[in-house]
Length: 327
Ligand SMILES: Nc1nc2c(ncn2[C@@H]2O[C@H](COP(=O)(O)OP(=O)(O)O)[C@@H](O)[C@H]2O)c(=O)[nH]1
Ligand SMILES: [Mg+2]
Ligand SMILES: [Zn+2]
Image 1 (spheres, protein in one colour):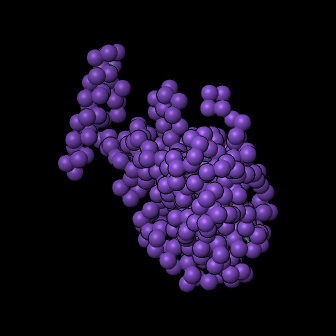
Image 2 (cartoon, helix red, strand yellow):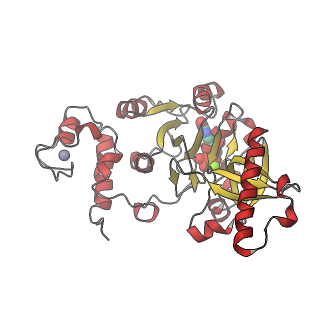
Image 3 (cartoon, helix red, strand yellow):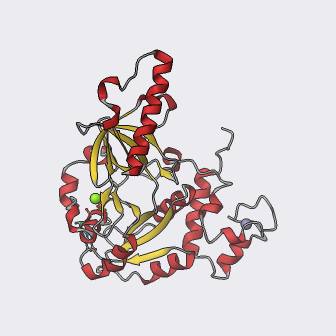
């Protein structure tokens, strides 16, 4: 209550400011005393409206012109300050500085990016997984690895590789509710986006994590067609045990050029198990792909770094090696 009164006061000051400059208060007809200033989180953006959850209510808000002027696009996950008029209409006034953000899906302030991979149907692609993990690292989002469909294939080797590399790993099956329990607990109170190839079971898993989701899975989502599915904007779904989940549509390609440029100088830092070794190679310009005296290659030989991870690194290095930071 005290907070509200204070904020209303600030609003009035703002109105007075305007009054001094153009002689007309923009709030004159809107009873500023009744405008409530609230802090919340953007749940989704649709058709120019922002749906902001604040004080247990979701308000439909229009963004102020200031965002367009600043070239800033608020996205789901943004912490927002809104003002709500007595009729319930809201305006998105400001967003807080972001802790991190992703371009695909457009979402901000993630605690985790859950990279989902299936042990079979479709068979797992190490390169796809490692690219997604690297993109998360590059964007300062903590990645976790979720290995699904363990009812079809033993995940032990994958679990070993990714735990060893330093990731939190969950092996689950959307067909075995109990297997999902540790993951469900882990996600409580956090904001997590799920990503991974189409068909790995993202939507199925989310439906197990929280049955209220009732997301379309498998055949149904295929039938709706790629167009509709991929253009859908990101949305934060609240979890029963606190926090939010973002289900993202599957992607067609993981072309770094189109998604996000990671330069060759930055790439080794996107493989977390390489980081402690960087600076220990014989040559300062070491690309960690073939050089003599490379500390990363030595670690691969000694079995400290997984060859599967290093193969992905080399493939990504090939993709980015000709990009120049000044281009
Ligand atoms: N055997 C098995 N099938 C699964 C599992 N999880 C999902 N599926 C199936 O895999 C297909 C794709 O699942 P879906 O959730 O739509 O994948 P998404 O594209 O990643 O959202 C569907 O036919 C699901 O029934 C699992 O753990 N085990
Ligand atoms: Mg899906
Ligand atoms: Zn090296």
